[in-house]
Image (tube, rainbow, N blue to C red; front, side, top):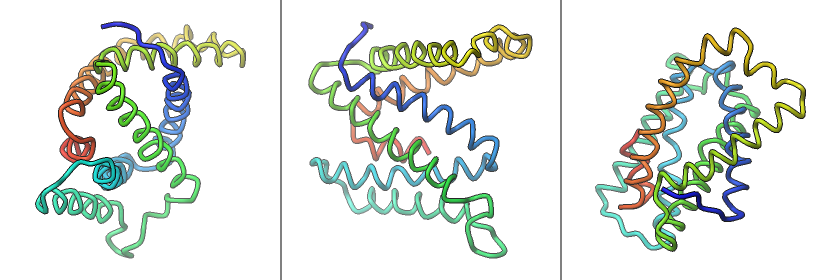
Length: 193
């Protein structure tokens, strides 16, 4: 593992902070099953990008991704009215777009590029991005005068649970990027759903 620097990683780190704040907003606004269901739309976009950059797919692979996306969309519909649940507004749609399409797309394809061009591993990629994102987020908290929230009693009670959860998230993310380094982004994202 080594710290890898490229200007684009700083941009992705900023997007990571924005995605984290937007995801927190979504958790407060939308039912968690709907958040998960709509995140499955990303593999379809990744399929189009992968096809454009030169990956070839069988008909079965393409149909599998399309059926996954259709199932996710159907899961997000209200069963009685066959419309999207009322909690879905343009604001929430924009948050979904930013997190699952824009940020995820840039992060995954940037990793794919750095992996192929410079041999950057998933661990080095995430350490590089999230060290920058953490430092920027800490600076933002200090700038807004909210750094004391990090050592508040509520935060300290939550800390052991956060450490356990983020440890598992880290393993999942590193394994995910390892898989992305071996094949196309759309295939890995479809199977992770």
